[in-house]
Image (tube, rainbow, N blue to C red; front, side):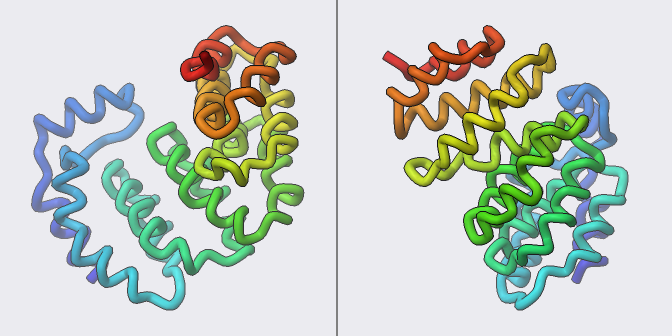
Length: 218
């Protein structure tokens, strides 16, 4: 099934589209040229089958991650989303490896909010053992994941955790960090606008973070 999936992807490569997609991603990765809707269609049977699994096949995930074309990393993320209910506490180490390899916002953000967020909701102790360490690492993508992992928590957001992580990373000119801080604040403002307003007013944040975080504040 896995070999067939990879074969199907290669059979549907589009060179012209690949060049455009690579350019959009600053030419950080080669592409096959398969847009998301088409990719979803090509992998649908595989994803439906994956949902019946009882364990996550991490060897397959890392095999996809090692392939050069970016669509294979997207497929790996789609697979993990399909089996996220099977995530185990120790999988945080594997997720960290994915975040730090072939890193860019397109995979990191989904791994943060849709995978890490789910795992930390099941095992909150991972916040202390891993997420706070990510927030203080020298890797900007682990930092970004730490900032964004609660993005879908809404009223379950731990504001002490959010505040601590943001404050650890607010004194930077790094675009991807400041953008993530603003995004996290903007999203939480939909749930608790007053908290976000007071936090922004009382914190030393980059103008980008303030602008993004204040978008919905009246």
